[in-house]
Structures are given as structure tokens and as C-alpha cells.
Amino acid sequence: MKYAIVYLISLLMISSCQKDNPGNKTEFKQKMRDFVIGISQYAKNINPDFYIIPQNGIELVTTNGEDSGRPDTSYLNAIDANGQEDLFYGYNADDQATSSTDNTYLKRFLNISKDSGKTILVIDYCSTHTKMTNSYAENANAGYISFAANQRELNNIPDFPAIINHENNSVITHISTTKNFLYLINPTNYKTKISFINAGNFNKLRFVDYGLFFNDGSAFTASEIAQLKTKQTEVRDW
Image 1 (cartoon, rainbow, N blue to C red):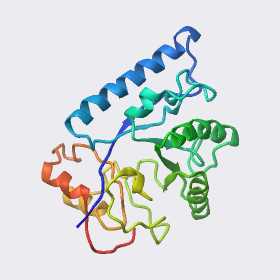
Image 2: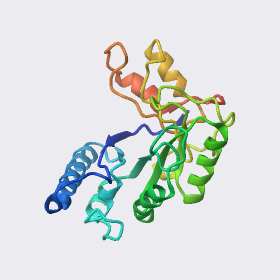
Image 3: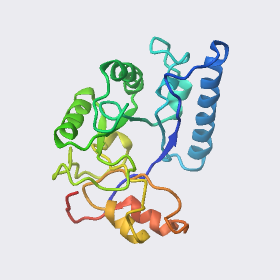
Image 4: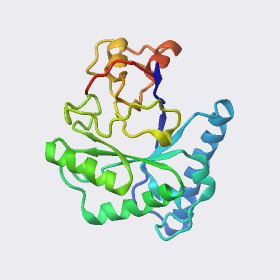
């Protein structure tokens, strides 16, 4: 069997437009860094292969939260990748291009993380096929791994493109070896846990983010989580 790594995304929602007291601007960012570092130390002490992937809040990668600031090595050493939404599409509205100003701002921070050896995982929200194609191309050109989601709810597997973007048939042993990912976190379209597990559990997909509980409130068992982590050997398209 081939294996996919299942990862946890910590949602760090820090807006670049947030109005705050200049005196505590650095302080609240440092508190968030310390929080993530603490999670990382705790989790990796139990399982060294546990991945920490903050989503958004990319300003945390520098000591002062500015793109001209020094990389915060303690924070960067505590994480394994960065997730970023709306980089090329969806920042102000779904299926609309993100402004060049916002795109450039985010990329400056993302590149600081990438240059430190971290994988960058981008989720763009677009449904027009030409825009989805462009999203994959722009992210690839920037050196990022991306997923073009046609539903903000992240409750489906898009039927476009017909062939997996950057198909990877290799066994995934580390996040640096992944070439694509599926961001499927909302199981509302699936009637049973097994249908949800099977929907994302096949050879072409690499990463599936999931919650601990299904729609009916039942928890995923250790066996079911193991199924999420195992890719089937059959070849199927999404």
C-alpha cells in the first residue's frame, strides 16, 4: 500500500489590516508564536512525525511581523509548512482575482518561509475553469503547492481538472515530497464516515485534512484515521 500523510492545520487568523495599538502589535504576534511553538513541542515530543501547519497569519514568520523583518527562527523551526488562503483568487470574493497589492504582500512573507525550507500550501477559491488553471500555474511558478477549491465550504472534490494536478505516484514519506493536496474538511455531503473516507482515500491524492468528528457527532476511530492515511493502490481520477 502507498501512504499519505494526514496533517493538522492550526488556524491562525491574523488580519494584515487589523487595527491595533502600536505598543502591543509585536506582543500579540509573539504570544501567538509562543502558542504554536508550545503545540509543536508537545505534539512532536509524542510523535516526531506530527506536522504543524499554520494557515494564514503569515506575518508570524518575522520577528516584527513586517516583510522587512528578520525571520523568526524559533517559530520557523517549530512549523513544517504554511497554509495560505486566497493568494491568487478569493481574497475579496470567490472566483475573483486577488489584487496584485495583496498578492505581493502575502508572497513576501510566504517566500521567507519557503526560503527557510518550509512547504507552502495555497488554497485559492475559484470555480471558473480558466481561473482554476491559472491558479495552479501561478502557484507552481511561485514554487507553491496549491489546491483550487470551487466551494468555499470545502465540502467536495472538484471535477476539474479531469487529471490530477501534478500527479505524484510516489510513496509520500515527508511533506517535502508532496506535489498536490486535497482540502476536504466539511463532510456534510457524505452520509456515512466510510463514504467520506473513501471519497478522498485513493491513489492520486496526497493530503486530506479532517476533523475528529463526523456529521452525526461520532468520533473517527483510530482504525478510520488509519484509513485516511492509507492510499489505495487503484488509480482513480478526481
